[in-house]
Image (cartoon, rainbow, N blue to C red):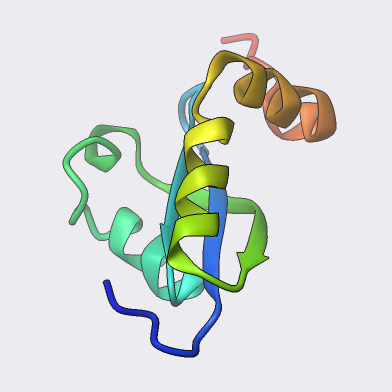
Length: 93
């Protein structure tokens, strides 16, 4: 990915059918969510459909990768759950 002068986005999506979330990065958040829902990403394909929870804009790819790495860490996962808990409640079925 070569963002050039474009901002890079780190996004969080949540599975509609499973108690899972995914953190990724890209230049086009809506396009990436569509790709996840089309089954083009191996790790998210079994848990479709996905909904966008939030996204973060960064100026450089290195800044975005650092944020993505942190959000995928244990502390980052807890941050996501704490700030968007309503989106991650387990289903009762």
